[in-house]
Length: 262
Image (cartoon, rainbow, N blue to C red):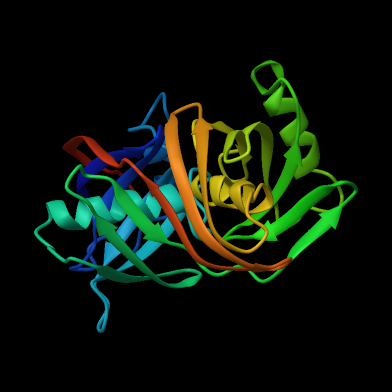
């Protein structure tokens, strides 16, 4: 099989993207996806996405983790796929697409910043002083100090593989409050099984936990290893967050062709 692939990144969270509107990549196998995402033997990425045709929408997003398994929503991946759609000639003032967690909207401003509407969140659970919530993917949020010195791989690995989370997996976010409306986040991602430079659903989860306005509009600046993102949302009450938008850059890195052996 010959692939025409594209590599995109959003604050260092990088993806292999395939235009699958003709369904020519429907039969990709787990081992093939794992190979494409391998940073030594393949293209190298945190995940792989297919842009599919979907009646009633601009496109469908199908996301696979670097381990080759189909996964849940990826925020930075969604933003990259919107930018890819525009590069394919799909021009919209407001994009509408469908993903694993439902319908999403997105827009691209004059500076190329992609803003993606995330799912509403209706439940944040406290867990041994930390927090668990679902922003399209399941997330564990732990507030820490001295984030740059933290061993994110070890501590994230231990939580992700603890008895409570080992079977389904969970993404683990370590968050340091910088200012009232500014945080820094480092994330250990399931499926990658390592720290990534950024995680969109994780950044969103961390920002919701670190709200600064008790009610109404919140705007949180988030620093990741790969760059800066912002999360905007309306806080309705203790467990309800609506109009959640993840905003930041998404850029094409390169494209190419390769023969993928079965």
